Image: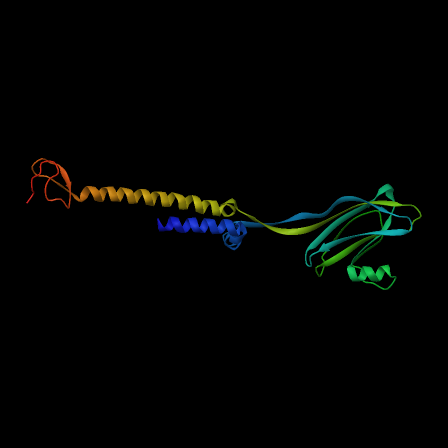
Length: 212
């Protein structure tokens, strides 16, 4: 019964914390694996870049998190593509020297990857030096490392609850059976009529005779 109650408490706690709470245990026993998944920041989007001008997009990125993106200029034309943080973007707009994280001076189609050093707002600049407008298809994602848990660990909270309920039920049932057996063994049998009486009775309930 006590173990059942403890398992019920463990199940509730695990469900509240989430299955990743058990990931250290899962990794110790080889019940966890690791994979990478793409989380979209910007789905494929059409961006119009004016003639002899630029267009920029911004995104708030976490430092140390890998970023992947792709761009393609329609009709096989080209643009210049730059990635920079907020401070350097302001310098670049003012025509001052700036540090650019990623440079593609002429690009028609490209995939790119970089890891921001700090959490900040980053700018993606499409620079068109041609006299005709350009249309760019652009997408941006972050690459996240995820831990995949074995179903035994992933549903451990429910397993604790189920086993706890079973053990508590067995404990209650066993207690009732024990009480019933105790009640039977605590009775005495009348030597005259055979009636079973409670142990605290001196006279038989059926024939009224004393057993002494």
